[in-house]
Amino acid sequence: MDAARIDVQALSLTAPGVEQLEVEEAKTLARETNAALANAFRRHPSRFFGLVALPIGDPPAAIAELERSTGEGGFEGVVINGHHRGRYLDDRFFWPILAHIEALGLPIYLHPTQSPKAVVDAWYGGLSLMVGEMMAGPGWGWHIETALHVLRMIVGGVFDAHPKLQIVVGHMGETLPFMLQRVDVMAPTMTKLIKPLSAYLRENVHYTFSGFNFLPTFLDLLLEVGVDRIMFSTDHPYQPMAEGRAFLDRLPVSDADRERIAHGNAERLFGL
Amino acid sequence: MDAARIDVQALSLTAPGVEQLEVEEAKTLARETNAALANAFRRHPSRFFGLVALPIGDPPAAIAELERSTGEGGFEGVVINGHHRGRYLDDRFFWPILAHIEALGLPIYLHPTQSPKAVVDAWYGGLSLMVGEMMAGPGWGWHIETALHVLRMIVGGVFDAHPKLQIVVGHMGETLPFMLQRVDVMAPTMTKLIKPLSAYLRENVHYTFSGFNFLPTFLDLLLEVGVDRIMFSTDHPYQPMAEGRAFLDRLPVSDADRERIAHGNAERLFGL
Image (cartoon, rainbow over all chains, first blue to last red; front, side):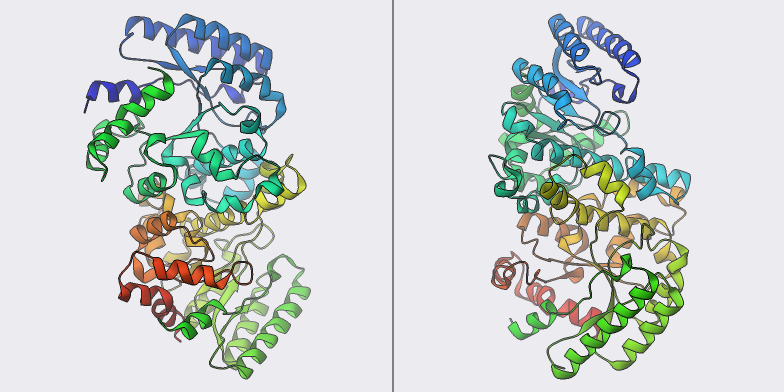
């Protein structure tokens, strides 16, 4: 096991959620964030790579920022922190951005965010403040929200229009492996898609651990999507790196598969 | 394998969703439904048992209907079809009903329903009519809605107040097994509960197949909650009985465990 390579993957840097800001503020914050990341790459070129933050509420500006940042080097993907004020990436408003990302061959890391306020109020209202926040966030809501977003992208035809697009989701797949065969009740005759939903989950999505160091959950993912789409990651600094590493080392997989999960798949996907 | 016993379990009868009706209408429909079921038990006493439908929007009426129906025999549990116009069972308004159900030693089958309208609009809006309906229903939304309901019951303290209460959820656990270890980030110091959330999922919940004949999903459930809490069921008439039976017969479990899943656990839980 090459621990340094694991570090590269685990420490890939992402930006805060610019998606919920006003467009002008988002443009500024994305540019500043990407510049700060680029500076980190220049200082530690063998150690870090990054994901571009984009002001997706203004597609021409997002495309300009995408081209500017990737021209500087060190960016090997894009991070999008979920819905943009209630609009999901199946909305054709965003498709010019997706077309550019696809053309550049960059994966999109779809990072969790809180659900739209109407969902939060209906689902988590009436709970204590702290429990409500956790239920809407890392205890439950972030994950379901991200899974919903992936499903909307699929049924909205994003991957039929952009078949080379690859997205990455964390947390062992955000419940999607559990539901992977079920979602096929939405058959192509109904969705008008080229393939069953599960095919997109197996062909256009990669999955990382993100601190979901739970063997039954990992096995569900492994048996549904196969080892080539699974990538080790921790949730640094929220969870101990050592815990993630120990989980990886104990997984009941072959040494070759462990290498794929630890770094090989990420190297291929991100072109490292 | 005793196929007749499987049939008893698979064909246990449930009522339609009286929870979304006006109280007077719900009272009438619950009474009529329960009477129709009681008539079926009288004609086929060795073949059917049923779950009581209750007008939970009027707790005194629900308790009266519960006592009336169970007095007639043949009812071995209660069915509640999810939230009552946006209110979940963690709401203390419903707790007098839960106290009576607990005292009678009856399990509650928590059946899926559609999420509150605000959630449906925010999450499934903008999709085609048919895809939106499926996403809000059997393709995704019903399951997530039911899982959310179970988590609200737990964090709302239902099982600390009513520790003998047992609920049953279908569809291999409605994504809860996938998230079972994760939800423990909501620790007792935060929730003020007696136990971690996962303990309630292992001690106050039973799980049925309901046509989720997916081996990776089953294994996730089995490894998280253990064989004693898993019960065979089909989704008759929506899925072929033979398919469910074949899935059961092929499960990689011991013969003794297969018997527990096929009928033993249900006999114990429902007191058959």
